[in-house]
Length: 242
Length: 242
Image (cartoon, rainbow over the protein chains, first blue to last red):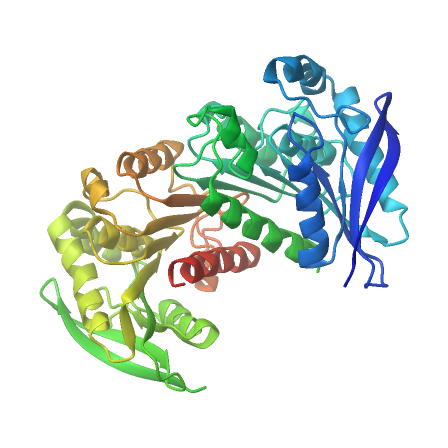
């Protein structure tokens, strides 16, 4: 097998995005495809590496999506928050950011457009749910340590795919009320959903870089939860791509 | 491979129990072993079949445990409840029912006593947690559509293994308060735990016989959740038996 990488330009929400496309060119049939939405800091190594793993471990085509335009990443949480807030409040804006890369991915010759899904990390997990809420033709939307608040919970009846939320049970950013509201939203929409709670685990558990921020009660890498959640994701992707 | 079955007599809580032991005699090394606690109705085909699957699919030794003595099963929920109530209130009684079969299993020549775990269904799931709370040397306790109320939550610091609760998110028998109390118990004990919630799923989702009771809002087989939860169990057993 041979891992191929391409920097993929696309427009979304008025920005020029630079995505990171990964696929195995030893496969010659159109195959399942997965969008990977990065953490709020933008498209860094973490999401790119996960896209590459989706290609090498499972043979999927994976597009790690840009968030802030031109592939920029932002170090400071203080700088990131004002950029994210509009995406947490405007369905139109966030949906443009998530639907455009899906369109780009769907027309790639390597891709079976009938078998697409989205995953995401932190705010990127929320973006995967936003894509589902937009009524997109995806088989699954999976969020790792994702925020559970979306712009338009009343649209849950539009969700076509299956939802999986992989959550640190001790994530200080996710209250029990938010979990309950997320459940209610999905129940109301008649959605096939799962929530996996990992005890003793906080935010950013898939991201080794989280430890560099020195906020271990809030952000902390957890190798066990990282491994478990990746396998739980894999089970759902293999289920929906059968 | 060759599946072997043995009816295994043991004493527990003053009763003469008749367990159903399953193993693959094509394997000649001591291997991981799993207790299987049945639903409240007693040791029926469901738990026996799961024990056999643990042997055939994974090569484990599995003991489906008796609940009411002499391998009896009880059809009526009205008759079952008075038999279960003492086990829901007395740690001594329930611990004897769960610890004795573990002792019996541990000394079998086929078994690696350093790699044992317990699973259970419905009240049997609760029994697997009770075994962990008793401080037993098990690597994992896994409950399928289990009750989440235990006799001695204050003993959670004694738990040595990992806990996994596989729960129908719409199980009318499990309130959000019970889920929260279960989390708190495990958090207090510093336990490695997971809870998987399956949306649109009620009680008894692994049991096709549940549908015969004609109470679909409370008890209902769910083939998808059955398959998913079995795979989630398998991931944890393979993790702890490495």
